Length: 135
Image 1 (cartoon, helix red, strand yellow):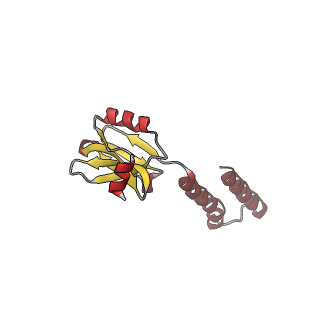
Image 2 (cartoon, rainbow, N blue to C red):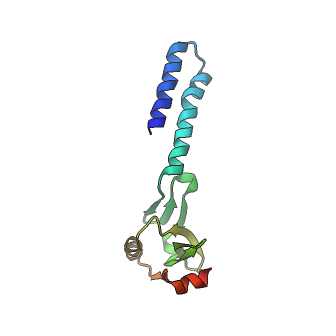
């Protein structure tokens, strides 16, 4: 956020020194480019969010990177491994994992509470036996 403010301040400083004769493209470059960079950095460093609505469950950081599954298609939440890391999988009725959520971002109690809210069971665990089956 501080980087964004510095970029905007530098842009206004540049525009005031150039005066009103600056073209609109120059103004766009000076103000728009730093704002676009700041938005990209925000997307990269912000933590993912899990959102539940009446129609669907979504997970991700921002719009273009957000994954979602229809709530009516969700069958259960499975605990297991993805790339060797403990993860939660939102699985649809045809046993297809649609969304993978790393366990680093959410607690086990939080995912159990989510399952109760969604009225779906939680299956699997993070024991060595389960890890051996997924490796």
